[in-house]
Image 1 (spheres, rainbow, N blue to C red):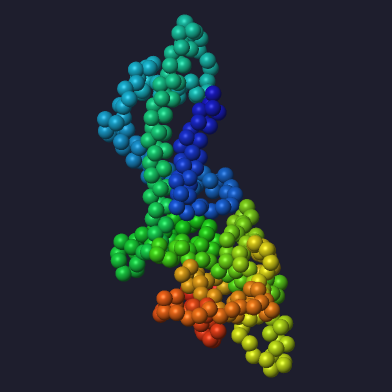
Image 2 (cartoon, helix red, strand yellow):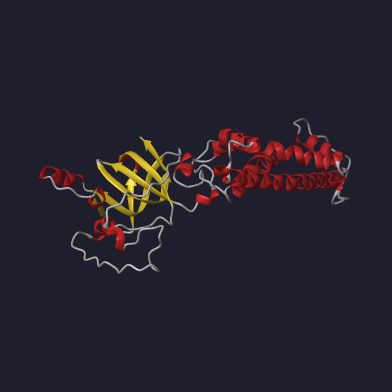
Length: 327
């Protein structure tokens, strides 16, 4: 019976609150995706349970909420806890004058204590869910916090010192969550040097091992840089746009093993900046592709952007926010 009660308390007050917190926190941003030790799991659950536990205790002990609903089962709450606690202590068993009545009284005490604990745990779990939801909401707006406002500085410091420690660094690096919400629909593009070959593409997924280390990344619209062709053209004195040396890799996705990646550059590219140059088209479909120039009209060519027909002229590549990381 002691093991059963200890397991109930461990799950109800430590493990379940941590799971509930992560569940509602992950509604905004996934938590770390790696296997924790039992000690780390208990410490994490203990930290996220402190505030909900104190708030639940105050409401149930110092407000009329502690008497709702009114329980009339078995002895009083204090008496039920005393009987249950006494039954769990080691010692010689006393033979009561009426064993059947004693067992029924003990069962009623356990039931009353269980219902009292259920009332406390219901409120505790509710506050843990609210805490996880509020924490996820605060982290989801991390990119909007300005250092010019005192409240924003406090929230940013709270995220850096506590909340983000339970978020994978890859989640922040490989997504736009660290950007303002107005830019969170940007595409995450990567230039990766893997096994001596330069690749680029749109990052769509990544994989971690049980220790949180990067195992590999998936790229869409992947292309390979033809370094050997560039060197041959330089020897012949031929001059081409650098964009023309990119060759599209057939297939829907390209998987790069993390252990082969020497370094990578990450760009957050705006989806509206998707103008396709002639060099990009030839890099995608090959030099033998026939591309027909469209007629220019005022209605089809916005004054602020270059159309595909105008891409015959040389232009500078678009500038996007970028981040470089070396391994």
